[in-house]
Amino acid sequence: MKAIEITGTVNEEHQLQLDEPLPVAGPSRVRVIILIPEDEEITEAAWFKAVATNPALDVLNDPTEDIYTLNDGKPFHDQG
Image 1 (tube, rainbow, N blue to C red):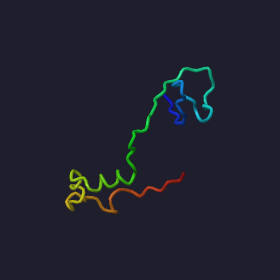
Image 2: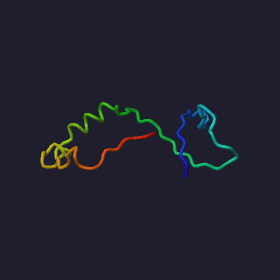
Image 3: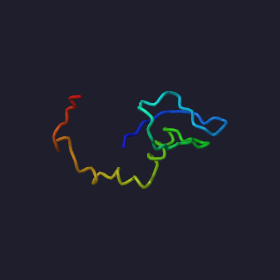
Image 4: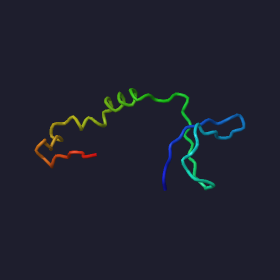
């Protein structure tokens, strides 16, 4: 199944109006997932702060968990 992300607006008649045409030849049946923003959308900065201060992740700061070095593995050079 292929996914396409596109924005739109729900009008007064509770119908979805897309901001631009879909890149799909029709007629065709589709499945639609609607994501509605919460009243208070959490910001990216708030997510980063929550992760940085979460005590459940303190184990990542333990030096005994740092078991790999730059000499481990093989370098990856993206050719794309």
